Image 1: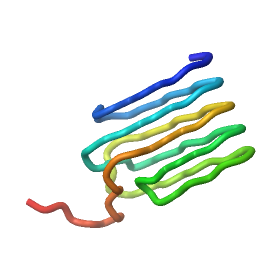
Image 2: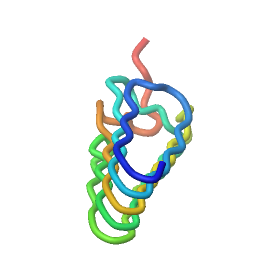
Image 3: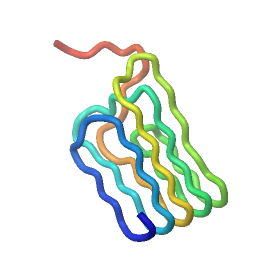
Amino acid sequence: MPAGEVKVEEIKGDKDIDLYAGQITISSAHEWNYRSVNASVTIGQVSARVYGADKGGFFRSFTKKTTDGEYRLHAHVMTGEIDLVGRKARAEGARQPN
């Protein structure tokens, strides 16, 4: 998408979102079950509160890989902001309650 605001809420599965200018918000009330997370901006801010990360400026990115995740998330904005919000991501290797 060239410009604007993209909101992704409560959708499980792989995500690949690219935006030239604007804001990407990805949220979930459920667990973040990703084996690979890559969120980056050329100019702007990456706020990955679910992972305890917040970075702003030029050429900022957040990358996280886990062995037990199920999905892949890639989000990139050339100029703008990326917000990953929701419940805190579980620690790698943590067991789920039955």
